[in-house]
Length: 353
Image 1 (tube, rainbow, N blue to C red):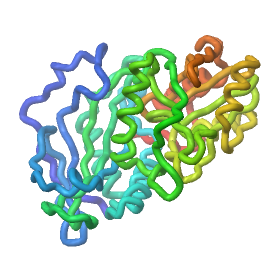
Image 2: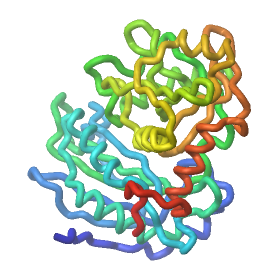
Image 3: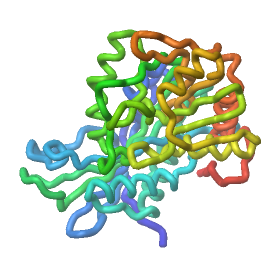
C-alpha cells in the first residue's frame, strides 16, 4: 500500500546560494526535510516540509539521556540526470538494529523508504555532479518526551535532511593508534550508530589532531592489542597486494555497508579476504617489513579513505603513495562507478528513482 506523505514545498529555494564546486562538508542543506512522529504507540503524520529549525523542550529526553541514533547515505546523479541511491534498504535495516539496542521503536522499512525517496526526488537538483561529490542524506531518530527521568521515551521523531557535499577526505590521511581511550567494549553499543558513540570520540580525536593526525584507530577495551575501527570508517589492511584483512564484527564494530560492499567486490575479484582479529603488533611488523602495501578506511562519507601513515608509540610508519595502491584504487573506482550508474552490477545495490 502506498504511503501518503503530506508535502509542503518551500516558497523560495536557496539553491542559488550554493557553490557546488566548493562545499564544506555538512554546512549546506537542501530545501526540504522529512519528518514523522511516533506517539500513542504508532508512527503518524509523515510530512515533507521546508528545511529549518525544530522546536524542542529544554527537558527533551534525547538531550539528557542519549536516545539518539542516525544513518548516513548518499544520492548521486547518473549521466542522464536521474537520481540514484546506493543500498538504501540496508541503511533502513541498520537503523532498526540501532533502534532495538537503544530501546527505541523500529520504523517500518516502507515508511523509511517512502520518506527518503520522495524527499530526494523533491530536492534532486541539489545533487552535485562534480567528481567525488554527492547529496549526503542523514536519517535520524531521537526521543522527544518532555520528561526528566531515566527510562525509555514514549515519544520519538524520525527525520531526514540532505546536504550537498564534495569529497570528505580530499587527500590520504594520517592516523594514530589509540592506546588510552576506548570507544566500545563487550556488551556496549559499539555496533549501533548511536550519537553517544561519536560524542565520546571527540576528545581523543581532538588530542590526536593536535599531534598532527587526521584520525585515530580505536583498539580493544581490554588490552589495546587489537584494532577495531577508525573515526567514521571501518578498516582494511592489504599485505603484499594479495591478502586483505579487516577486523571481524564482534559487537564493538559498526557493520559498515561500504565495508560489506568492499568484501563482496574483493572476493569476486579473486582476493583472499579475512575477517578476523588484527593485532597492533602485526600491523607494525608489516610496516617495518614493507609488506603493508595498502591500508584504508571505508564508509559512506569517504567511500575509501586511503591511509598515508600510521602513528604508534611515537613513530610514524609511512605507506606507499596513493597512486600506487592497487586495492583501494580498484574499490573506489568501482564503488563510485556503481553509485553514479557508470558501472553495471548484478547485486541491485544501485536504486534509480
